[in-house]
Length: 125
Length: 107
Image: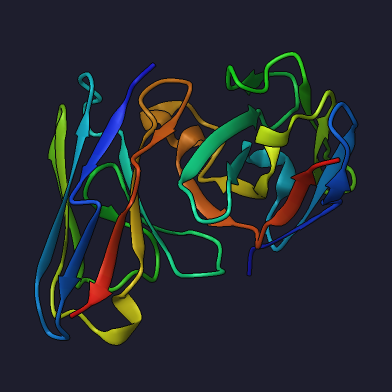
């Protein structure tokens, strides 16, 4: 069974930094692309970032580009999201999401099939 | 960037009803369209990808259709566990983007 467990969320002041982790199990981690999605409580879903199976290719949405860094440790099956220069508008639940594959055929590397339970990040003074 | 628009934003329905939710893309996305279900306080659950392919374990009461710019999610025989918020998402091009959601409530 696929399991994705996020951690590292909490309260941080504006301008501060935080690193989220997503511990994966139940599948061969290093053969799947991974994504981050966030959701302001009570609001809709917002796409944040993606990383290829080998960690070489990454993507960031415009709202987090140059402030967030996605990475992965395939030896430990852990996905990371390093967040810096945090703003109040970054306050959200952050979800780690597994893609269907790492293949670009039929864009399956972008098809979400499993989600973590989420971790809440609150940016406030 | 591709904008996704869902309608309605909310609807009320009774147990046993059939409901249809529409999702429109701001440009042609072929069939690169997914649907998700989210219940209060829970993570989203993947229902459909490629506009009409059910994810493993998703019951056939859920069906999707469409291509290009207009897509629909249909739920037949609504049950209490189906009352939730549903989101569409395009994965044709980065940045991936979601519709605003449709909340399905009990009448």
